[in-house]
Image (cartoon, rainbow, N blue to C red; front, side, top):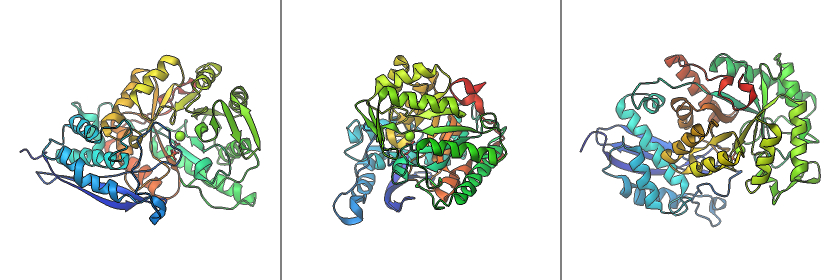
Length: 432
Ligand code: 2PG
Ligand code: MG
């Protein structure tokens, strides 16, 4: 038995940023090193992503995780106990085999990702290195690591704001920033300018699930327009210094090539919905757009990519669900040029890395992302940095489950003096 042998695997129920139960796993190695991982939870989920195991029934609206927690100390512990924590790939293969389903439906994706993350943290702790460095290592320590370009939500929407507007995320991307610390200052100014703007409009000053201002608009475009005004009011040149990024999350409003804009009380077919978004791209400094068409609309995604002609970053989230095979297929078909990377969509760290690698191999930009239901867990910041993903999406600039992650990146930048990925990390013409 070596000091990095897994000696104990423990699970517990903790609570996420929406006050819902979630799974925390704790792994202890023979040498005493410990690691923890907490599962996040999505609200707008792709149909092919790893699924959370929830108890069902009446208590806690069916969302409790007692079975998933039991699976951590039960079958998952059995599968990985006695293994070397440094062998993340072997451990994740054992986790996937213990579950046996493509979507981690038996043991729960919330249980598998928490355990997989805890193993990763324990291995890093044993090596004495910060997690980002442990990930970047594989040899030359920190060589390829970079601080990611953040995209930060200013207005929430869709499933994160009671569907008050149809689009889900209206984000600011500080493309003119020279460092991560400066990037946050720029977005902070925009966030507060947007808040002031909403107050003047007499809009309720609440926030949505990820901390973005609660949307009070008559049309979806009005929200984009308000974001543009906030960038200007903050004193930045739109597009040059701070650009706009959207997550349409179209699977939430469309199926079978038809899209329903509830706010505007109209339904559009695929072509009209694409035309609407192309109009936004013409009128506003939008550099990135996520899930512009629904996950069942490959035809629409290809058409959108063709119409935009590499002008903007087109991200697949629900469309690709952090799945390496789907990323490779999308690359062949020309359906996206960027992939969102969410560990709990895949269910293990190794499958997450495989999706990121598939993206890089295809020449895609890669964006590590949080979920709308989060915790104080900051693992994704280290993944984005150590894996040199280039971009990071964490939600807004409020609420500590979000700020914990931005602040962790500040610490890494200060301590390690890593380069900032900057606008060059984006797909599309913005990189120049
Ligand atoms: C997304 C995420 C984060 P959710 O769609 O990109 O904004 O939302 O976690 O609800 O899937
Ligand atoms: Mg999304």
